[in-house]
Amino acid sequence: MSCPPCPKCNSEYVYQDQSQMICPECAYEWNPEEEAAAAEAAAIKDINGAVLQAGDKVTFIKDLKVKGSSQVLKIGTKALIRRIVEGKDHELDCKIIGGGEMMITSKFVKKA
Image (cartoon, rainbow, N blue to C red):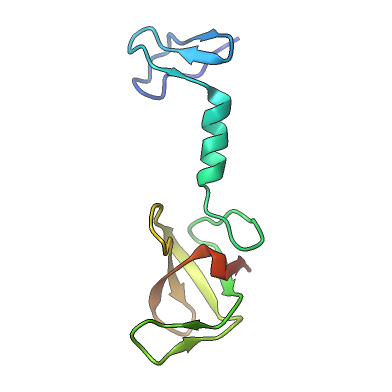
């Protein structure tokens, strides 16, 4: 049985102790199941629960007012996700088709 390398120091001398993985070189301990669950929870999802990635096309599920402008983005407007910025309220950096670029919250879009 081969163990994955240490995520902290990339050592190959990792061993398993019950459910924990332990690195003898840097003394880092982790549970691979919890790490996988945390990575899944950190994924940005649309309103339907589909995982969004850079390069995906999305459509708006409701009319959105543009802050500081009289412009309204209508329901069904399509956008292309250029990048995903984690840790922000507006996590999707999008290029709106037929418009400009804008940051959008993932709860207002669905994958096209």
